[in-house]
Length: 279
Ligand code: AMP
Image (cartoon, rainbow, N blue to C red; front, side, top):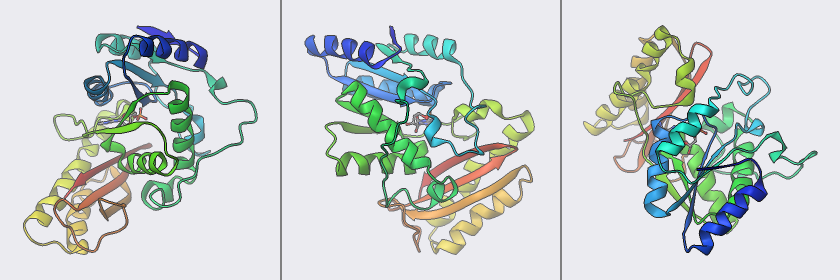
């Protein structure tokens, strides 16, 4: 596995793969890899034999009061995991991935509104910009993202469509711990008590979905079922809980199987966790 530290090194490796007739897949990450990330690698490899994983903790998607400096980093472990999963190139640029005085941004204006977009101003501008930079640096045929970050996936799909990006976007299902908690790099910052409290997040989503599927589908009733589970867990502080249309992530009045999705953000201690579940 090659470790590319800058764009020329990455492009040389991708050019050699192309010359050998291989399609190229990119899996963008912020590192501190876990089995969820590696499931994206597997999906990418099933569609494109040459796989690039990027590891870059993107400063522009963090707000001033957020956890950029304390975001978990584990490069040696990331390298070992990628090597073990058949990754061809680990692209790990430095802070100079952004040119000095960088002043060009990608702003998606519809699906980035509400939910995380409301609570993390500027977050999706940073995400869309860095993903476009990574796609341009790699010139990949496919790029793979997780449904765990559903609004991010919607923003990227919209950007790819609106800006005619020559890339196929693949999506991977949410990878979960045995107790249902969505895998996340931030989970390793949880104390044992916070980790136990965090398990109420998927339980709340499942309770709401069970109610929706039993036929009681008005928004308020469905959300109340989830609220009850979260309220019973004093270790969680809810940021938002929403029922939305799966198509555009706008608030939905009814929970409809196959058409709506539940989305949640909550703090366990200082750690912000997100999750979502299709009804
Ligand atoms: P991150 O490193 O958190 O920026 O995530 C990099 C990519 O991995 C994104 O496309 C995420 O949606 C995806 N991802 C992170 N956690 C999971 C998970 N538990 N299941 C599926 N995909 C995930």
